[in-house]
Structures are given as C-alpha cells and as structure tokens.
Length: 92
Length: 453
Image 1 (tube, each protein chain N blue to C red):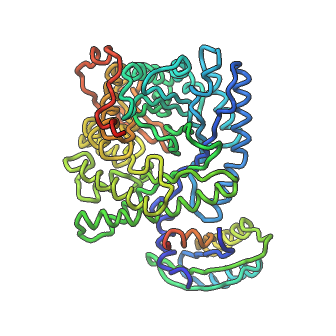
Image 2: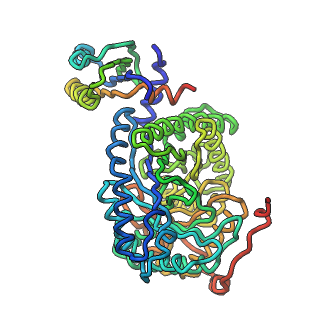
Image 3: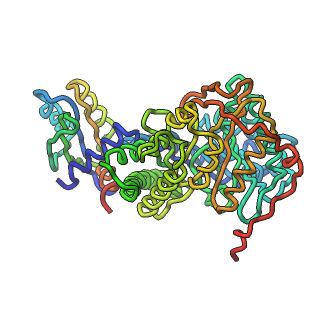
C-alpha cells in the first residue's frame, strides 16, 4: 500500500440527491475529493471519485460502512477501494 | 483523473459481473520443529505451531479484502507433509494428527488445512505407510483436512506399489464417507510431480524446501476470461490467445498485490502467486464455457484438447509477465463437478473420461473431481491413476487424480457435494480389467526425459 487515496464508485439508477448524499458522508469523515468524473456503465449512472484522507487514525471500515449504508438509502451501490486495486491491475 | 475511469470500470465489472476473486490465501507452515516420538506431545506441538503462526491470518486477509474491495473466498493452511514430521511417532495410526489439524484449523477459522500427505514416488518409509493407511479414517473423521500422496516424479518414475495401494485407499475412503456421497475422496489427491508451493486444495502441502512460514495466493477468474473472449468480434485464434494473455496479466497483478500486502502485514515471506483458472459452479465461471466460446459446440468434442492447450499457454504467458513469483500449478483446472459447463458436457455425452485424460496432458493438473460408479474395482482406479501419472512423468509436469467412486451410484446418477465442490455426474469407466497389471507392483523406471544432468 503506497498512498492514502481511495477510489469511490457509485453505480445505480440516476436520481436527485446522489452526489449530495454521498459527499456529505465524505465530509463527515474528512475525506477530500481529489478528482471526480461521471459516466455510464451498461446504462447505469456511474460516478467515480478519487478521494483522500491522510489522517493516521482514519477508520476505513467505518467509512466504508457509512458509505455503503448511504448507498442503500439512495438505492445505489457504493464501493470504497484503495487506489492500488486499480493501479496494480492496469499499470506497470 | 489519475486513473482512467475506463480502467476503474473494467475492474469493477470483473469483480461485480464476472466473478473475479482471489480464490485463496494459503499460509504455508513448517512443522519440522514439531517432531516428537510421543504422538500426544507431537499433536500438542503442531496445534501450538499452527494456531500461533496463523493467529492473524483470517483477520488480516479480511482487512486486505476490504481495503481493496476484492473478495477472498478461502483462507487456508498448508503444512509440512505429516508423514515426514510424524515419522518418529511410535503409534500405528496417525488419525489423531488429522484430528489435531482439524481442531487447529477450526480454532484459527480457516476453510481448509492441507498436508496430511506423503511423498512416496520412489518408495515408502514406515511412516509413509502409517500415514497412507490412516487416510480413510482421517478424512472420514475430519471436516477441513485435505490429504495428498505423491506417487511419481519425472526423476524417480512411478511407484506402482503406491499406485496400487492408493486405489484401495480411495475405495475405502469413499466407503467410510458413504453417507455424504463419498466426499472424503474430494479431499484426497494422488500426484505426479507435486508442487511444493501450491495454494490450492486438496493438494496443498508445505514443501521441505520452503521457509518457516509463507503466504501463497491462488487467483481464479475463468468468468473474466470467458467474458473477454466472448466480447471479441469474429476473432482468429491468435487474437483469442492474445486476449486471454492480457486478461491473465491483469488478474495476476491483482493477486500479487493482495498476496504482498497480506504477507507484509503478517510478517511472513511472500511465496508464490498461482494463477489457475479454477471454475466454480456459478454460471459463466467455467473453463468449459471458455473452450466453447472459442467455437466448440460442447466441451469434449474434437478440438477441445487444442483449445485447452491454447488457453493454458496463454494464461501462463500472461501470468509470468505479471509477476516474478508465479508458481504452484498456474494454468487451467478442469474439475468436472465444480464446472457447470463440464457437467453439461458430460450429461450431453460430449465429454468422456478418455477425453479428459487427453486434456490433462496440456493443462495444469489432471483428472479432477470425477465421479465413477461405486462398484469400480480398486485396480481400475489404480490403473486410471497410473495412466495419469505416466502423462505427468513423461511430460515433466504436475498431474493429479481426484476421483470419487460414489458408493451405490452408477452411470447416469449425480452426486451432490454442495458449495465450491458442486455436483458430479457419475462417468463410465472402461469395463475391461487392469487387475493383473496393477498387481505386478514394482516401479516404472524414470523415463529418458529425466536424464538431464
């Protein structure tokens, strides 16, 4: 593990309030957005964020749980994964 | 964006739709420091060693799984072949050792523990015989213990006395686990050229050249390869090979990352990354489906061996580019019961035992998870093993047999094992006898391929 950055993906049906809901959880955990983009995968709304929290006591599992719960509330699937999961697979 | 969204979505799709997973994180533990003539002390020693070394294995693996969002299906342990470390125990049977392994596996929360094993390719020690004769009872009275016996190597030839004995042991194991369809045999592998660092069960053991504690990782992903091949528009076979190679590269990188992080956190050596396309009963997560995606109407028809050779080679090439630690078996597995496409091919009459045997000469393992009628003679099972061992010895590769003579079942029946083991259609064996051949015993000498020094 080389960084404190995470890739957050939000996949589901589009509706009002997804970005607001997700980002408010991120704010609560002091997670900063480094980059953000939006696209579609198989007709599903897909938001991808590169996010960061450098605090040494950052509780990743609590953040993952809060994000996942918020996703359930909004009817979308939210995943928080360390950026290496993507970097390792596609880059050498 | 620092990582391209397309790359992110490709990974997400592999995980979400195509069943990409780390099949197993397997901790290899040396038990060489546990030997003791008193079997009770020995059992206490191995229990302490296993539960101490693997204390944090499950928790750490789960933490890493959550960090990367990549499912790790199984956590497992492999240990030094028990026949070696229990050689000095003066007890006629070693079933208590298997029970101790089971108890230790339960205590640390792993799914399987392998290494109730013996290496007898050139001959038996008294300890080897005690272990082998304990296998049926050991597998019948434990849940998580897996057993393997190496009966042949390219350098030593084939120990036909061991082959003959294993036919009987397999029959006895099936009989003792009759109630569960002979499931004991699903935890027992007979090997030629067994790898010392294989993380996959039932054949995993911790080889004698390995360090004290090591993390080996098995990655799967037939579903991902299947989807990638099916996405191509009217490809030629060279393009298919190229696509499989690239896909294998990506999957292997993922496994390497997880393996290194788990071993770093535990403080153990990182051993090998084994990319083996290991199917699961889930639809699409099938090696047969990949072969059919190449244009075969059913797996098992003419052309299947060539298609499998292409697949296995491309997987190895992609894997070896992705990691310098590729080891174990690394290739394509063709277990019948665990692969929905293989089961269908058998039930449609497209895939026979003979064809499977041919396929094993070009893929990474052997006759795997095959059910045969319960009344198949032990000598026929031994002869099936001998054929498979010959393929491994002559081709300088690992081959294995995991066969279940399903008690009370005949061709056309199906036995259900459940979970990753799936369900096995009972296959036809050749009705002519091999009894006299197997009864001769002795050793088939090492082949000329062994004389490389």
